[in-house]
Image 1 (cartoon, rainbow, N blue to C red):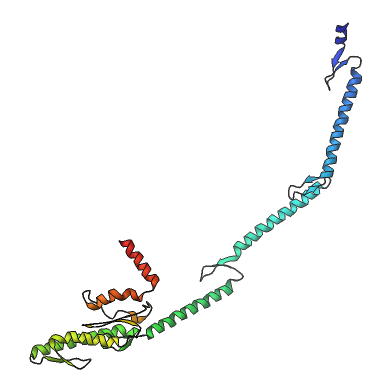
Image 2 (image 1 turned 180 degrees about the horizontal axis):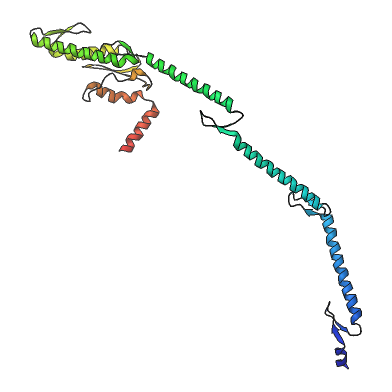
Amino acid sequence: MAEALEKDMIPCENCSEQVNLDDWSIHVRHCFHGEKKQVENSTRAITNELIIDGIPCEFCDTQVNLDDWESHSKQCADTHNSRIKKLKNMMDESIVELIPCEYCDAQINVNDWESHSKQCVNSSKLCTSNVKNDGNKLMDALIPCEYCGSQVSLDNWTWHTNQCADADRRRVENIIKQNEAHPDANLIPCDICKESFVFQDFAAHQTECQLKQASSVFTPNALHEQTANGLFSLPRHWDQSSPHNLSRYTLQPDSEEYKFVADNFHKTLTSNEIVQIERIQNRRK
């Protein structure tokens, strides 16, 4: 009997439940109808949720109602594309509008290029004028001649000192010739102080006399040293741009004036220049 009942039972294709053969048709109809209703309820619930919560826009991330989502997305896409196109145009315009200035090489907007160029030209003329004025001031400066003590302008200084040097050399040569021709005439007059000296002492006196004459044009604000052979002088503050600091003549390394300059030159420099020199000397050790 039990075996007969088992033979009459067959599984439901939808829920896999064992159903009597006589009730199978009714069961299957109810089973499929219930599943279809469940699916419809689930679909309706999802749709209602989308309608209530909305769908996020891919451009602005705004939650948009399902019914309005298509039109909203299209409008947002158009706005986004317009913004991208505008940014590209702005970048192209900014590149085109910048051109280099022919005077200072700066990148200038094309609308401002003309006014900037005029300003650059005026600035260049002003700088050139200042350089010329500074050059005129430098050329107008007076420098004492080492031979005659005369105040000579910078542009004539080289020519004047060469002339004086030639005249001084000829004068010494004449004195030597006169001394050789007249050995009894031992006294030679100094051209500067008009005093007379023997030939052996004349050269030393002449050098001392020239140094004294040149030192008279120095300002009191200078370093001086009186030695047996003359008066040596250096400015207290060394101005590299001043024409008065040009070397009057080449000093012999074994002379007293050379030693004086070597010992006192650092006193004319500023403290930062002294520090720089000391650093260079330390690196060479």
